[in-house]
Image (cartoon, rainbow over all chains, first blue to last red; front, top):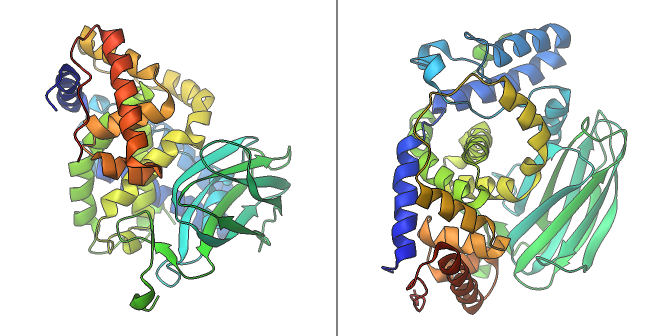
Length: 233
Length: 177
């Protein structure tokens, strides 16, 4: 491809790459540690103190303007760093994390695919674009209070509903909404999740698809793939 | 207990750092072209790496963990993360002033603006083709559509971009790879 568009895209890539300053892997570690730290400490009964400290450290380190908790030794010059992602902290993210921990362990359950987690909102929508034809057990967990109406539709568009129901949120041991989803052909699935007034922006959710036939697993390179029947599952 | 007191993922940080360093930029460029908003692209890619690191013990065993990060980043791009613009807007106002650099060249601005007018699937296809260097077959596999559909998307996207950017020869036959 040697068209002018290719030149434009090459230029876009080159020039933009030159301008991007990655926030840094150390920032990633700090973010993950803080998220874990808040969750663990909250469980130990010192929620208020930690959230206050976390907010202070996370939102206003050093110059009072950066939004990622500092790893002081890893940041050469805080004021030169570009703004980075707002670091989500707070009880709703802890609940999302808790919900995520209810999902199957992929090491032990490779048929758990396309799992994700997040904070409940009124109009969540997720497009899964690598869903092999198979029968799946869909599990949707909600941690917190309230309910979430979940609809799974086939394809990138249209209104073919493959399953729907309501998940009841609970702080401890929530019972997942379980649906059987039959994906007729390889392609998209869309997941819609609408929280109610109690759950929106407060509860955390997580969901996963598990192949009930054992035909589909989480691929070594990320997206789901169809397991070889001779591979022994 | 402070967050720093928690155990780090052992012996796996170097591989994570290497992957982060090698792929953060390229992923950001791709999502920048998709969003038209570089900060949003950076946020999404950083979040994708955070999610990867949170389960790095498992992910580092994958043959290609980058594919997982790429997938998460693109999923974030087309799903819930967009919906936090209000929060981001607030936070954005709290950010320190960035070091000022010259603005992007008119060609880049025009390309980003033209991309923004494309339908989502056309824009994804063209970004994956030109910036992620995926083949037609790979894009088709990702999108779950026949290769012919991807060729059609690319053809229409190129025509639209060529018209908007006043290019004259930007719609060649698609490389059949």
